[in-house]
Image (cartoon, rainbow, N blue to C red):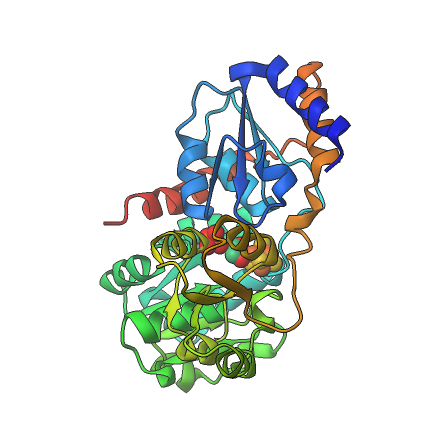
Length: 350
Ligand code: 13P
Ligand code: SF4
């Protein structure tokens, strides 16, 4: 990266001192990760943001829903900043507040809303988190989805899982031992979600029809292909991958888990990773004694994670050092109140 910009970022960060705390998700570019005070998966970053009450500015190098969650979990006095406001998440955008309210009406008409507990993936807007809190549900991340679902099935008979159908199905079937037939997919673009009342009544898991465009690219063929090219390869994927991909993989886990797994792997072992490219490349560089490849033949970044780059970080830090707050992410008080209930429920999971 541009040495001039690196110098400017260092200088601005030094001027801010303890006033600023920089969080970096594992999918961020190297040039950004270099300036992060902590790195993590979405669960760890939510906890870390909440654990820094002395920092006036929380600069979140990640995507919009992560910055919203940080704003919800930090104090009134603290300001959360997203270096590029265009850093969204296509999966989070697949569930709007109106669509989810309509879905709840469909469940109520089928007579099942009362026995349904919403479980929403962190990758959702603050509005969806507030809906979840209003209806007694919980948030989950890829690292605690199993515990979240176990908790939810202790509260009700059915779960409405938003918005990632793959994480929902993978957790229900792999970890909780439900049958794929216990899961139905609610399509927000079809009347009644495209489901009959009988289907809704029989289902245990109602999965929202959302997915991640990055992890959705990996296919069964990607797994078969890498196994034939690299004999003995270990296939390790993120649970946002399709059910058949997760079924064909050797290991599954959150970004933090993937990092841990590679740290423990013996020298000389071979790994194919089904997750975002910045992380895969960083791991390959960090472990020259292991063979680490991207699971698919064609590589792929998360384009919105990648929007946060060094120029945006420099602009953010220099503005803050000059006393000018830019790109603040602020959730309104009512949304925050209910979203916080659902986030705190997640933090309190056993
Ligand atoms: P993690 O919680 O595993 O870091 O995943 C976040 C994410 O957006 C994956 O696409
Ligand atoms: Fe969203 Fe997928 Fe990017 Fe994660 S990798 S931020 S789920 S689009």
